[in-house]
Amino acid sequence: MPSYHLRRLSFLFFAIFCPVVLLAQEVKKTFWQKLNPNALTNRNLSLIPIPVIQSSPETGLKVGLALDYFFNTDNDSISDEKRTRDSYAWVQALYSFRNQLAIEPFWQIYTKDEQWFLRGRGGYLNFNERFWGVGNQTLARTEYADIFYNRYYFQGRVLKKIHNRFFAGLNYHYSNTRNLELVGATPSLFGEALGTTESLVSGLGLSLSFDYRNNPFSPTKGWFLDIATTHYYRKFGSLFNYKEIQIDFRKYFKVGEKDFFGVQALIHSTVGDVPLRELPRLGGPNMMRGYFMGRYRDKQMWATQVEYRKPFLKNLLVGALFSSVGVVAPEFGMMRMNDLRYAHGIGLRVLVNRAKNLYARFDFAMSTQGDSGFYFRIADAF
Image 1 (cartoon, rainbow, N blue to C red):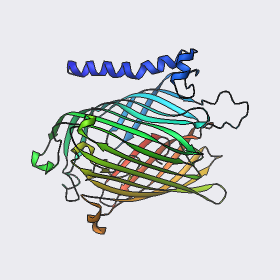
Image 2 (tube, rainbow, N blue to C red; image 1 turned 180 degrees about the vertical axis):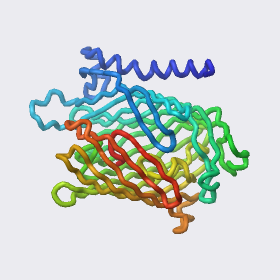
Image 3 (spheres, rainbow, N blue to C red; image 1 turned 135 degrees about the vertical axis):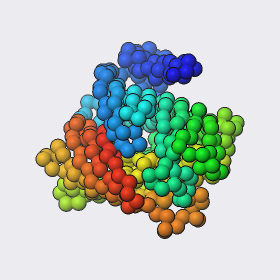
Image 4 (tube, rainbow, N blue to C red; image 1 turned 90 degrees about the vertical axis):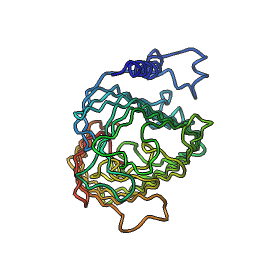
């Protein structure tokens, strides 16, 4: 690995683990209590490295270590019914059998009484992915090329409670993709795409979040709506000017005494000079399972899915059936019925933490175009 990558990785580890160390020391100083929203510090941390195994068609088998932490900032409550939902944060380092390296922190934190909601992720990727082209007229399923790149990224949100479980605030996205190389095809496969050797984007925007689910990991009732707009301008440090909007809606319905099903609709829209790596992509381990992530990509993407879940053996296991449909296009007005893509599959969830209602997810999915894949993850797809 080049020396500048090692320096960047050293900085990344420093940036990730310093906040963890500060929290672990149970800071009592008034300065820190005032600096952090609602005294988010003063938490008791117990961090233990945990082996991680994941699998998806995009990466094959991935192995590594994670530092996981679940906590609740409402420690002062004398009632069993806390007014603050659980928070979590983790850092993981994973390496796949396809020579893909990912070092990433994730966090979703509710301060006391849910006055603030902090969510984000970031990290470093030394990655490769399959590429069929841009748009709906792509290479055949088995005739893909490979894209190799290094990427540093950060996505963060700071939201303030407006009323009940409605939050509003700012979001920031930074993505620096370097050393992008196409292998297995000529550069003409990129077509008119931008950022085909490297790209740096930096954008700021507004976010609205309504979260009335009963559980963030494996919800069985309630609904969720997230709307985020991001503007990427040169004055923010971006090399590309464009606008982006993402809408994510989820709803869960009970069927009978124990069964339930969920529905999700996802819209990802961009306008302007969007670089290749930031184009909306169809497929992946959560939406449109069965398709490789990026099997189809373009400036506009729309997808929806439904999933039926049936618990048994006292909720230790949950069976699942799911189906999805999606489409990409350069403009929303150019989306056509003939370009719709379909996928479906079956799955099994295994309870790994009853207190958090947290399940390990095993899915097998197929597309109507012959793609298929196995997925192993923690937490439900949506």
